[in-house]
Amino acid sequence: MSFFSKCLSRSMVFALSCFLATAQANENPNLADQKNAVINRDPAIQGQCSRFDKFNFPASDKPSVAQEKGLKNCEAERFYYGIETKIDYVKARYCAYSTQSQEKSPNYGVLMMLYANGQGIARNYKIAKKAACDTDAAVMETVGRMQHLANMESGKEWANPKIDICDDITSGFMQGYCAKIQSGLADQTRAQQFASLTSNWNIKERAAFQKLKKQAEAFITARSDLEVDLSGTSRCAEVLEEAETQKEDLLKSLQDFEAGNLPAFSNDGYTKLDRELNRVYLQLKQTKDPEFDTVKMKDIQRTQQAWLTETIG
Image 1 (tube, rainbow, N blue to C red):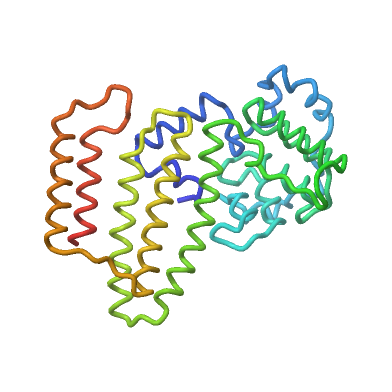
Image 2 (cartoon, one colour):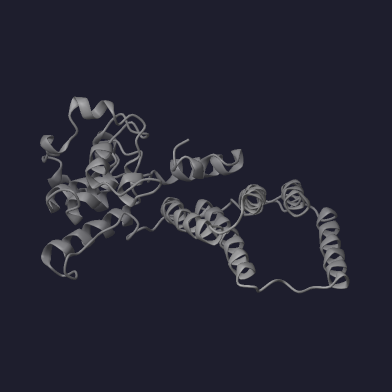
């Protein structure tokens, strides 16, 4: 499964909601088609973008036929940001141009960054602006990127200026897209921290931790997918942010435990907390599901089951 597909596949409800956000906003930088991007431009940006239509992306910058064969299902973002692989701007560019990629069409957002930032290739603001215009995006995102690029080119930005596809976002969908990038990078950092914390553990202790981690991940998935309202346009970002909160909590708990800061509670205290939890749970069961909120009682029940599996299993 592709890295960026994970955002859309954890639950059918989540997948459908993200799909609708994409369809409504028409702004996924990975689904851009040059012909459609030109046709669908808003009048607000057509004036400043139309003059770049006559330019072609440099043929010499594109992958060869032989290189194209090795790019099947590639993801330009992974190579650009170094998610689950090393940063490789040349591979990012080849993948962004490739029709063999996950998107089956050029990734203009990544091309914009590469040409504007001079990453793996000489800076070329003309081509960067063309890529920005050809990126499917909300109108104000394109306006912001074009202004950003103009400032970079004129020297109004700091020394060695940079632009990122997530710098000038205005839409809920792009919030989710960018949150997924940050989540992927954070996952890598956490994996390294977990590895460091458990490096001196014996085989039995590591096996127990892997079991706990697997159960925790199942709960985190249930919690973020089922107990976050999906009715807003920033739903993807909110789901990912909740998952991040839970993942960070797991890491922080392990760091505290390893430092000797163990939780202190009595059987009495546990009994009171458990009783309060059950009281709230029963109260929710007796409450009518909200009409406009996507979180229903059945979702809370499924999440509770995942929690019990984690704490008892």
